[in-house]
Image (cartoon, rainbow, N blue to C red; front, side, top):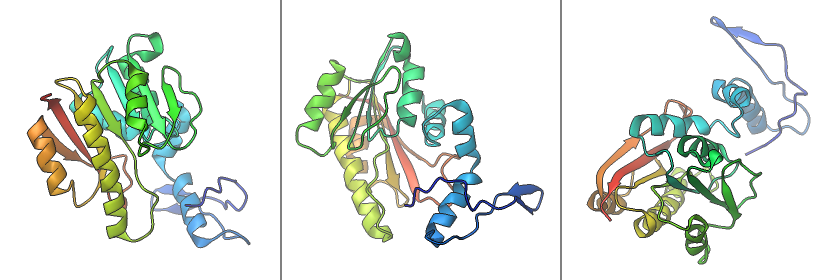
Length: 235
C-alpha cells in the first residue's frame, strides 16, 4: 500500500450530493492506487477523528466499538495486544484499564517498531518467533484478562490467499490466549469475511462461554475484515 501522505496534487473540494469530497490529481510518479489511497484517507471521517482525538490510527475506533459492545476491558485489568503498531488499540486499552495511572497493565508486541504509548510496555518482535509467547507473557508478569489481536498478513490481492494467511495469525493468537488467559478472560482477533475457520470456531466454543462475530461500523465498507470475540474463558 502506498504511503504518500503529502498534500501536493490535492485539488479543490468537489461537491457530490450535499457534501464536499476532496479529489486528488494524478501526478508524475504517483500511481492510480496511491491516488485512490490518498483520496480515501482525505475523505475518511475516522482518519480525521483520529487526528482530532489524538489516536495513532483510525483502528482505535474499531476496538472502542468492540469493547463498548462486549466489555472485555476492565478497570485494573491486564491486556496483551498482539500486532500493536502503530498503537491505536494499545492507546484505547491503556485508557480503559487505567494503566496510564498505574492501575492496570497493557503489554504490546509487533514486528514493526512502535513509538512509545503512555501506559503501554512494548517489545519489538515477530509474534511468530518461537520466543515471542514467553517474552510477552513475562512482560505482563500475570495472566491477562484479555488478549487482543489486529494482526493481518500483508495483502497479496488474492482474496483466498489473504484470508488463509490472516486466519493463520488469528489461530496463532488464539492458541496463545488458550495458554495464558485467566479464567473468565476474553479474546478478540481479526479474521476475514467467511468467518472463523470451523476448526478454530470449534476450539473457541469449547473453551469460552460465548463466541461472537462483528464488523465494526468504523471498518471501511469495502473491507472484508471481521472480528471474532470470545468471552468467559473456561480455563
